[in-house]
Image (tube, rainbow over all chains, first blue to last red; front, side):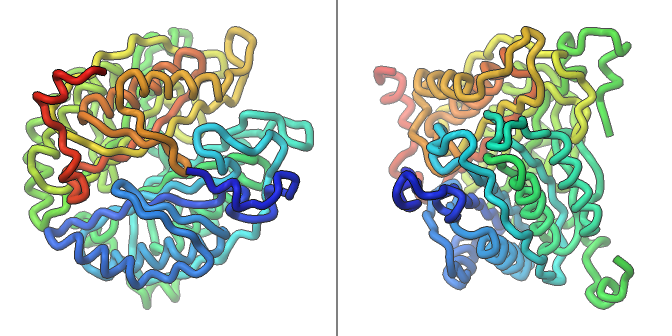
Length: 229
Length: 229
């Protein structure tokens, strides 16, 4: 039930290893076809999980490991879903800084863990998405200051604007649109940027792929490659 | 983009009305059939939305209003999905205490809003689910004390145990199983119990309905009615 034991001796720096710091994702892929089981098994059997641990469940699949590997696998998965041409939704939960599930096994001040923001990989496929980002500040950081929730959120939103995926605020979520790879990279980047000052950060992203309402908004690869960003 | 204006004059008590306090849900229903569009339109057209406002989107549908109405509509929706006999997932986001989306329009100390926990309605249908609960404490409460994140989480978990839906902790989430109505009521109750001491609380719940892996675990209504709880 816990992965904290994989971090080695209790005295080891818990930010040093992704699994010791509880870096991971939960993924629920829903494919709107009667043939969903075959489609999902086919996609998952070909997914490159290098550097990641996986536990499959009936509600979601857990992936744990380094942030760069996670982003790669999540973009690969979403792209593969989109290439089936079926309408699909992909629900992602990202978490860091709390390996012990409900009751965190890391003491306050064990983090944060600073990580480079991985570069997006573009797929040529469109997604619309809704994104929520939660800095969970139960304690004052090692530096002696309480994390500034809103400052961190603003930095993540600014980064989404720079990536070109930000489309606005709706009730409880931020709307993202664009290339699947850049939409997922936006959520990963926001999670990591906030994670530079806050130990425990979670983020939820739901992507809609191949929606009938997207037909007028699909990416045009050639036009987009030449567009000013 | 905001519903704060529905709360009346700025000097009004923001906890007095559900919309003024930002009480609502976002809902994404995914039905694993080629006929998903007809199935969803049929279910949504018959859903009783008394007391709620609705905004439909391509990623999710927003529902706002009193907690009791929200719980009723969410259980009705999940039950209707289950009765199609198709495999389906239902992703729910609950939020309260932050009507202004990314930048909260309520000052710190505007809440909390205390609400009675609605009684569950049992449906005779089984769901497995994964649940996350986030007390978002950006500020000290009106009472002058910082909310105690872990105390509130423990109270919500204890309530899940009392309802009989708690099945254990997994990475980043709590696993719930049981009658659809009791699973949803568990998440709503946890959200409201934490909301008695924390202004801004969100909760995410993903339900899996009619999964092929549930076949050995479907509810037996008669057996369950007589079981010790």
